[in-house]
Length: 454
Image 1: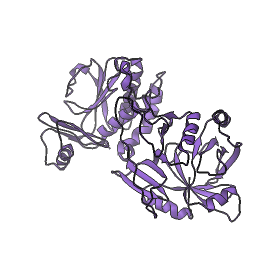
Image 2: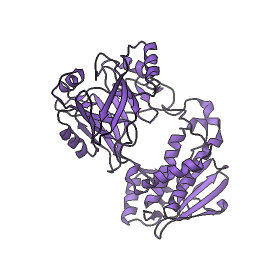
Image 3: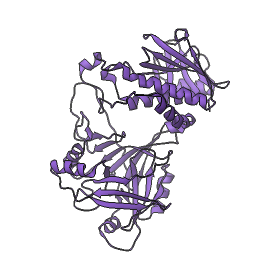
Image 4: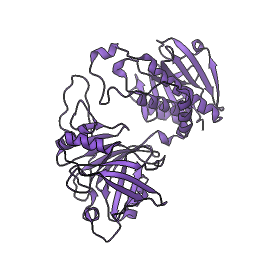
């Protein structure tokens, strides 16, 4: 929550920075807000005084500027309050709240203060939606991370742990994960715990407000437009922004993919990331496969993509003998089935191969076929990142394949492969130049490129 003087001016600032900000409505206590939100639950609320009256909420907003508090949504307020009492906190009573939207709808919730007063910066407050907010705009800002500098970091860490947030093993009392993917960091994070495997390096933007002091709140957001990473300070919040998969036209097929996926998956279940804070440190996991069959969910996602492509009239699909598909690179898996999807002239054919009884999915383009993605990486427990991440990776591979452009550049033993957000290479030190030359037509040998499918 960010206190501002003039909502329209604040909304204009955030919109000018590429962050859609729209009026959310008015609260009965006299405040009004603007919301910066997208299709995921986390959002930023700009809040201002909308009445000359006096009450604890209005007076707090009237005297404040910039970030003032934050909220944690819970599914069961009483269960959350009990957990906090058991952890030594003294939550206030649960009280009803509401907001009238510009369209006249009423959004309702139950709130609970955890600190001395409303919108306290020492601790967050809790909110349980009783009338859920309508979905955010599909092209809105997705809040992926938030970094806070509360007065008592350990007290906030205790609160997050009591509410079930998953702590990082490297920074167990400074970095936490939420179910929707949002990361909460308490800054400064201090020194990481040494786990004997891997190293993390983290950067926070250098904020520049009027006093040249770094903001106490930083957020990372992804956007549906733009093509580069940028940082900006808005109303005391350091915002790091980058464009995500939604900027590519084929992402428009995702609703149809989701619908087909829901119908095709049967009783195949999702599973959580067993290593939410990073790679495994248990050696035995590298030689263990607990349930190879669950990876068939990725094959179903690929089938859903093929159905969405063909149903949209973008291409025709043909199942072919998987042994007859020529994949560039080493082959270590026995093929199960293969499908080739051909689009309009100028596009590269999209090839989907399934291996090891449909537990591995390979997505590629061209004939012979360049591999854009293979999932899971190896299928062992140590490399498992959960179904949500693996399905997201499959989606990105299809979006890349359908987006066209330069996919791969080869020369001798060197190869550069493009991804949605960059590129990877083997035996090449200047892969970005190779891709640029191929895109400009100055390099043609060893280039796999095609027209966009839509």
